[in-house]
Image 1: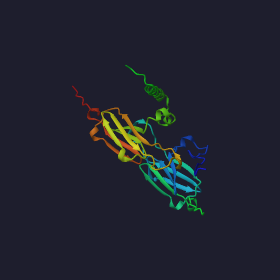
Image 2: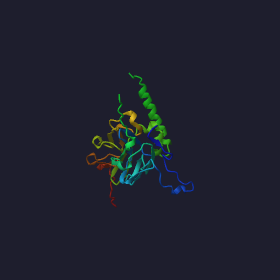
Image 3: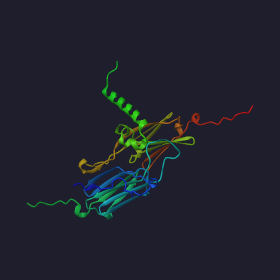
Image 4: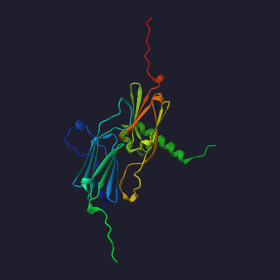
Length: 132
Length: 149
């Protein structure tokens, strides 16, 4: 089984149906990610263009990794051609592998978040010597 | 002599399709994602704006090695190119997700007027490339004083 699974609300968090549509100012974008496994850790790379360090929140709680990025900028001036709009980013993953939460490292560079999630001791591959 | 080239025919057909859909799509930025033919060839996505006597081109290009970024300007054309590298040394079977596209890109954007190529400034920050291009002298609006006779 894969160590990373989709959790239910992978797109926008559901909003109360009673909420006024006009008040629904925020739309969320799902950041594209690469997730790969190294021997002793999981690495998550997420494209978060326009997000600065203070606009980013990362949480790991009960096996769910949450990425939430806020964007504070827009193209200045009178826009003649618009192909993108920067919206807040939101995405969640379920991580089934045991992670050593204290040793998680995150860095943000060129609009890409790199998260290193070290595997907990018991989840690391162990070499078992075979006796003859 | 004209040699029939199926690839050229396909390209022509695709351009034709792009042209048809371009007018139909309600808001381009959004809908492009669902049109593989259109979106696939338009990387990075750009916004073009006008502010005072300059144009501002912003390209959404996270994770591009700044060393590979290149901006060239001629008349009213600005060409952006660069390379987004894939994570190195990862075996295909080690990936749980591999959604981020990688590779070289080149895109040329046409501006409504000529720009002063000598005074173009480009900044890459937070994965967004911003190019500020002052309009060429002859493209700037000019105030003509009217003599009353």
